[in-house]
Every structure is written in C-alpha cells, then in structure tokens.
Image (cartoon, rainbow, N blue to C red):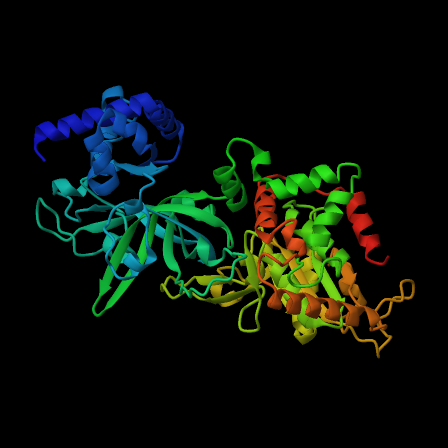
Length: 584
C-alpha cells in the first residue's frame, strides 16, 4: 500500500469519525484524561464502528476493517494521534504508540461467509478475520488480568532510549502474555537489553468462556433421525467485555479465530471483538411475525377462539383438553396439562428480593403411571424455546474445576439448571435422586438461585468465595405415588405426595396429584389410549378422526412461539389460586 492509498484511507477514517460522532467522544475522553490526577503512559480509546456506514464513505476501507483488522487499527491509531496533537488535547502524548485504539465492530454483513462454522475453526480452515458466532455460554473462568500495554526503557542513562516513550509494547489480538512481555528486546540506539518499567504496565480483565452453538440446546417438537455432534468453542473476552456474560446466556459474538502453535499441539480460540446478548424468544417472534402479532395465530386456533368467546375460561380449557392428545387421550390429566401450558408462557423474574412472584411456575406430577407422566412432560417441554432433560451423568447445579489455560484461575461449568435459561428443565423421577441432591434442589428453588462455592485454592481471598446465580428456567418433575405409606399424606387434603417430603409442595408452584388409590380411572385412560392407537392403525389417513383434526400439534407450536414474544406476569392472587387449585 503506497502513501497515496494510505492518505485516502486516513481521510476516510477521519470523515467517519466526524460523521459518526466518535471524534467528539474522543475529545471528551481526552478531557477526562487531562483532568485526571493519575499519570498515564498509554491512553486507551474504544471506537465503535458500523461497517455499513463506513462502506458508504469508503468501501475499500470497510473491506480492510473486516478482513485486515490490524492494518485498519493502525490507520485509526494514526488518525487519533494526529487529531490529539493538532487539537492539543493531551500534551503528554509524544508518539502514536501511546494511543491504544480498540475497534469495536457492532455488526458485520449477514452473509454465510461471515458466519463461523465450528468445524472450520477446529480444522484451522477459518481465516484470521471477523466472523460472527452465536452460542450459549456453558462454562466460564473467573476474572484474571492480562497486560494491555507496557513501557520499556534503556538502562544506559546516557542513551536517548532511557527517557521518553520510544519503546511501548501493546497487546495485539490473540497474543499471549509471554509474547507481550519479554526480556529480549534491545535498544535501537545502543543495542543494550531493554528493561520494563513495571509501574507503567497497564492491566485489564480477561475471561475465557466455552460456548455451544445455540442450536445444540434448541429443541424441536418434530422427531428427527439426524444425529449431530456439537463441540464447544473457546472464546476469550477482554476488557469491558469480560463482565458482560453469564452462564446460560445466548450471545452473538463478533471475533477473530486465532491459532497458537506449541510444538505438536495447536490451541484454537476465538478472540471476541464485541458480544451482544440475544433474546431467543423475542427474536424468533419478531423474525416470523414482524407486522402483526396476531399473525402467529393459525386459522384453526382462531376458529376455536371465536367459538369460545362466550366464556373467559372456555378457550384455555379447550387448549388444555386438546394438548398432548397423542400422548394421552383428550381430557385425561386435564389439570396437569393446564398447568404445563401456564408454565410454558411464564418465565421467572430476576429481582433482588426473592418473592413468590419471582419464582417460576415449577410443575410436579404425582401418579402411579410414571411412564405416561414422563412422556407427557417431555412432550410439553418440547414446546419451550430451550429444553434440557437432566440425567445422572450431568451436573444439576455447577462444578468448579481447575482452569486448563494455566492462569491459576478456576472454571465454573454450568449444570442443567444454569444452561436452560428461559426454558424448561425436566428432572425425571425425583425418587431416584439422593437426599443431599434433593436438599440442594429444595434450597435452590426456595431462593430462586444457585450458590456456587469456590474453593480457597482457586480464590485470592482467605475464605471460601461464594457466587450466587439466579435460576432462569422452570423445573418439571414427577414422582411415583405410594399408597402403602401414609406418613406423607396431608392432614387436610388427604393427598399422597409420593416418596418425597411434604416440604417440596411449596417450591413447586404447581403440584398435581394425577392418580388415586382407586385404579378405575387409570384403567379407563389406558383403555382409551389403546383404543385410539389400534383405531388409527387400521384406518387410513382420510378415515381417521382425532382431536388433532381440530387443532394440530403444528398449530399449537405456532401459538407457543407467538406467546414467547410477549411479556406475561402473574399476580400474587393468581399464584395463590393456582396453589389452592392443586388440592381440589
């Protein structure tokens, strides 16, 4: 690139800074540095870039920003340094190496070539340019420090390199601490080995997270024979981005793939340039129904709604009657299905004071036929935007392990309750959980938060450090009824609570007794289910008539997707009514 091209790119950079208002922000930031009593060697500036707006000024420069980030950063560094010198904003700035410019790209073209494929990353096929990756944070390390900039000087007092700011090391994208801070630099004036001025070292926060592609946790109500293996991507967050992530959150990360070669080993990371939190439910809703919210209502559901307008409860009761009719006959497990529908549309609130309103509508079913209960809960949870079925091989809460990056920090691996944000976490049969696990689950549900104990060896504090993470999902579980034992029967309701303590009835917002000692109803349900299966087996599709002919599962899924884009909050008296209705 010759001098004429560089001058044209610098003019384009200055025009963009002036047009976007970044030049005014640069002046304000310089005033903050000038009024500060602290002595600075390196001045840090963050410039937010919109490639679409930059392309309107100079398309060539926009292409340089997207594909050669370091070259574009050097141009902006020179422009900012010239602006500071010309406007006399910071008299202490002697050369451009004292101006540390971070280019923060807020978006990149929505093209397939700019979407990061984890397969290309792990096979080292991805170029070192900007990509976008959308995923869920499944684990993250504790905050550590890294060197943003360091000053070196010549130890010979008579040398020109002993004073001033001739030797400043700035962290580049993907560089390790060993590459930034070294002891083999020599003076360009006398050839002596340079010495670091430790007092001028500039430190910043750093967090290493593991992210899974968001489709790995997305459930689909259709059964697919396709088997896909998902592997997490290591994402490095630096500076102010280190405090913007939580485990279980879905984020869209703009970054650069980096490859670190260590003899026969290759370390693959994704250096984040910007990270934006994504709301799955609202995004899916607005993507499909951007014009009219009522567009998500299918014609069959609209017809049913018009037919039930005479009553405030008839439409909801009809949906509960139809819901899950391919798992159990229509009308059976009616109250449980109604509670599942309510739990699907309600999300836990995040507030400092944990009250009954902030809890999610957790569902606990007690019945004799646990196979039917399990199938029904799994079918209902498939309508959620995120569904995780906890198994014994997984962690329910969180685990703390040693960080493999060698920084001395620890890594917090999220469990099923932390990863299933804004979704449904099915636990299966609580009878098979150990007592300590059930006690921890009871404590977490009562406080709507998970407490993570970080061992002393992983913390700089003298005592054990605790981290509290709010629960952002609804919990569904079931337990087998035990009619032989009457120790758990409530004195007022005379209901059986299975093989779990009575205290579990409170944190589970909705607890449903789906069976009674009289087996006549269970036999009737089984007879209806067998009759439905056998009848559909001998008839062709034109002769079949099921309750799904009125409202299909696909239509219910569309209604569920539409409701997810709205905000639904239950009042305290509604929650109390739901609580009392369990015993009716």
